[in-house]
Length: 121
Image (tube, rainbow, N blue to C red):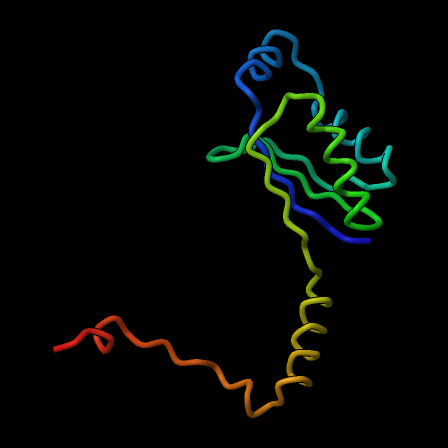
């Protein structure tokens, strides 16, 4: 199972509709997620670029995409961003695999040049 971070904005008409008749959007998203064998772990409203954020889990990428397409088809959201997430354990295992391939000596950190040293006199 893979985890995903979803961020979205509601269309203006949808916000107006939600104000006139508030409903539990988290439950709507949960139902859509579970219909595809996924799990909605968290649902948040947010300030800033996006109106909502969710963390979900799906069996695979294709299933996650199918679920999202079913939500997009409703025409209520736009400006959607989904990010595949990796657990800390997956990240650590990936670092170990990378080290095996490139070797410990090649894994030295790259020193950043300061903006001053990069400038020509």
